[in-house]
Image 1 (cartoon, rainbow, N blue to C red):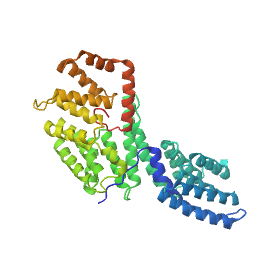
Image 2 (image 1 turned 135 degrees about the horizontal axis):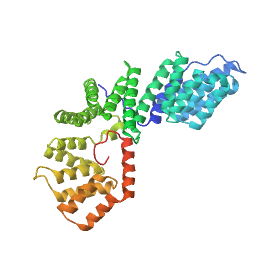
Image 3 (image 1 turned 60 degrees about the vertical axis):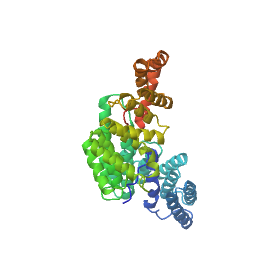
Length: 418
């Protein structure tokens, strides 16, 4: 069975890519023209909608611009018809022409008139779409969509539900990526993220997007440390979609989180086999699971299977030498292994210096290098350099800011140089 289709990263890109195009296809048909040449205006609009449907399928922004230009001609022929302006606004969103889309939306509000703007479904729908696509303000988009559903429940229900689905997925990501200062605020964000992910699942229950939503929910559970619920979701998905490498990656990760190492090892092995198969992973998600072998090695190390972990970590740094995390974990194992036959302080120092070179902001290699230059292979000059790097207040503040940014991009980080 084909793998679950992935979600794009980033709220604005996600909504624009997956929502904007189909809106025109599902939109209400223009009402009869009352302008100077209704037949010509309608003919131009029909051509524009056909072009726009093609532009959405092909991703051709220039074709969407051409459709918007045709609709502009319809507007000139029939300036009192708000449907032409509504469709033109959607076309410009598909074309990712933000300034022109916002100007078209302002024109739509003008044509409809101020007293109606807060109630007209075309205005509400367009406003929600603009918030989600260009402003990354999906919380406001969801508020407007709720207003639209309450006031005009029969307006484009399929398209409204689809836009709401992608907004809830995007809002979930925003909540997870936020880094509030207080523990209470962070916990509140996690609770809200779980709620949004569940609502997204409910919106697409029974259709082809449900596996996407459930995979998202499983990952949200994991980030929130609700490991049993995460494991249950990932196991169900792994049964339904055994060829999806990302699902096996997620399941292995949450099993390792719970120290269920034997099960985790089996899943990492399945991942490493499945990922070699054609179509096992969408190219857009390849980077997010590229470190699986490293994580497998770390799991083996944590479980006390140090020789096997060392083998996986050596293979990983040979394959991905530019990743400082691999060098850090390899150096740590070589320095701290309980198996004396695996300890190699000289190689550990080389690995940790490599990690430091690749990522000077990570404190992990610095702390272990301080131990080496102080106790294992004393070197006063090197030690002074490391201590200065660790203790300098300005460097400490810059390091914390850098790590916070990384965690915001990937909240499910493994301990170490993420």
